[in-house]
Amino acid sequence: MGNKAQERLGMLRWTKDNLVTGLTKLPPENDLEEKAIQLFKSVQGFMRDRFYTFADGLVPQIIDAIVTCPPLRNEVYVQVLKQLNHNQKKESRFLGWVLLALLAGLQIEYPCLYLFVLSLLLGGDTCDQIMWPPTKIFSITCCMRHKTPM
Image (cartoon, rainbow, N blue to C red; front, side, top):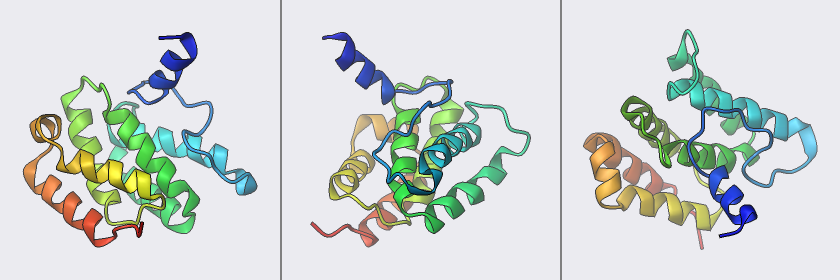
């Protein structure tokens, strides 16, 4: 596999580092790129991959940002999925699934992302081993309720 392919794969794996750019294509207006970078720090903070004194208080900020600015919604979904991918920390994985469950109540903008998130939630071993069953059921229910039209 070439360097570019490995670099792209690395962009979608857990990291303790900051993002230098968003993970999705964002409209150029309103400093969305900068907001995406800040939201990633909040995602890391809630998942305990970055230190914040009041990490639980980050969730309302994340939700408020993506409710008031829908283009950031898919960005945050992808950020959470990135932090779940190859994450070795049990607490971080658990909190990532909790955050994903909370996000599942908001409609995903792109059908392909919706299908990916739903397949992840409905997935077998990986999902079952690290996700608390009531959180998984809640996530699937919310995700199905806001199904994106194809």
